[in-house]
Amino acid sequence: MKCPICKKEVEDMKYRPFCSKRCADIDLGNWFNEKYKFEATEVDEEDLAELEKMKNGGEEQE
Image (tube, rainbow, N blue to C red):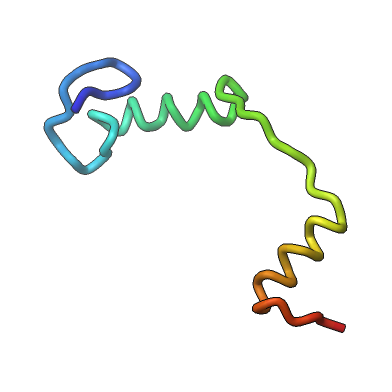
């Protein structure tokens, strides 16, 4: 398995999937600095009610 940051072979599984704490910290910094992004969808009240209904086995909650 190769480290997603530096592409070195991962030998120590302690920081998997990264090869070292340094690469793990670089990845965490990338998240904090919003280098990585993904699309999010908004959930409206009707969707939440439907999910809650499904979670409760189809029973209506008051």
